Length: 531
Image 1 (cartoon, rainbow, N blue to C red):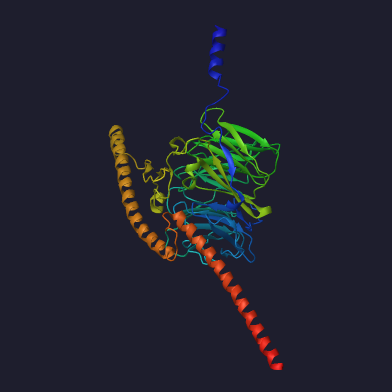
Image 2: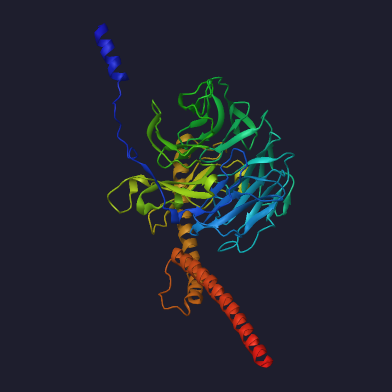
């Protein structure tokens, strides 16, 4: 009988040594030198932040600037050596500490600074042609420098900021005032500097890590503390929600000052589910999570390496995959949103490493090796798009919705939204209410789908007209065929800029030659007159 029980226990606890995974052979691939961004004056600030923000149109980098804070906004296609006189966004009176692109508008960026202000900037199309010094909005509520900002993941025009006054402020940018002094909500439950902020999928909960080594989960609209950790074996520096898995991941150090990552249950922060020591280095660890692939990337400040794992809901939770190694240490790092990756090369994630010692921004692509060149549905599920699922007013009134999802398949226009239940009490029996909710959800999805198709058709017609006008204006006088896509149009634009620059150089050289000839003629006349 004892042997039978022990055999059953062994069978229950046994796990296979090898685990099948689509991402076991993911590898990091840096781009060639020509595709890097060179001669970039990257900031030398010691603040622990990314200093870089990326979207499918621009890359923004905090830079060195005398007499205040500034950052660069570089078109993504404009790789190579950066012009020393490239325009800057320079409206802050102190050093810029954090920058974040609006997830729903690729031409709007927020920045915060040591001057205790947060500014919202509109980047002109197609790119900056001169220094931008006037912001669209200025948020003045913090009494000390502002170190972190985060956009709400599903609601439009909701911005969170936190500063060295230990407060988190929620701003509604739908306010018509250019200068906003009063946030819609102030969260004051921290006793020290806040080191990181992270939202869950629908933005109904906010996780923070603090200098007092505690993780807190907060209901941002109520300002209530939901959960708080008190682990003495893990000193937290950064924390991250892991999508819809109801898990959190934190990076920090152990009691013996080894760099460490820890996995937590969202509903119970008393003890971590799993802890893993990495190494004895002193650089800060930045975690990044891809909700579409359940892959975790851990990037060390001052390292050249990027570790990546796959996360599951069952033990042992963390599955080490591999490590990208480089001899170039990163000062900061930016991440491309999933809608900007190259699906034709099976790219699932892309980093932009800031290498201060060389003034270089180096893109690194994480690629799933596949022989087929066709679109891979299994590694590209529906992902968050650029359409908000809520207005600021709806979110502030207590409504929760997941992100509006899009397909990454080339040419696909289908979108859907994850509509979540609101907090209103039911007014009908449970069975009828469930049927009603299902029917309502289907109806909402159908309406949103049809509305999105209508909007895209209208937008495509307008965009086609504008693009055709631009193509006609650009292609006049050229023998090459007119560009057909936006990328080709941008490439043509940059080629024209380069040709104009070369023509100006030729004109200046000819002016110099003309002056030299005039001087020679004058000298010849003077010499003839003397004889």
